[in-house]
Length: 169
Picture 1 (cartoon, rainbow, N blue to C red):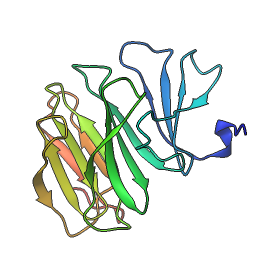
Picture 2 (cartoon, helix red, strand yellow):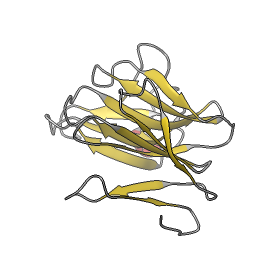
Picture 3 (tube, rainbow, N blue to C red):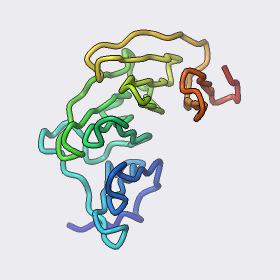
Picture 4 (cartoon, rainbow, N blue to C red):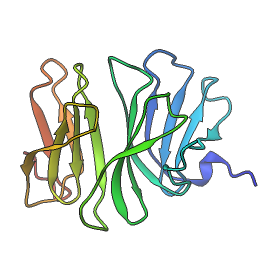
């Protein structure tokens, strides 16, 4: 059964850091999609490990700047926010984080030039991993849920996080 990409709302897109003909698209309820020919044709990503759910909400796609084959996804699947990691350019994934409570998502990811990963959750968590997702440390818990992390392009140590009511921290 063929389902076109435009059957789904698009939540995020990302160009591969080394090959701009490769573009990944995260969808609302349709998983992850990819083109390798500059958007002339699209195909749904089939995870070789079966970790990425075909009906996942893919909120964010982030690439490691030091290793373009390492990518991270902020997804909502099986009633929980999760962070999935691929080290082979999106052919297979492993889960490296999930929210402690159901119904809370992971909404944004940023990977800095040193490979440090930052995530924000709907539960109010702002986390970091300095070992490519093996372990996570709390940067800070917020009363509000978080939906976005913004990083100063001239100084990546300056970050802002945003909540749905419009609060900026």
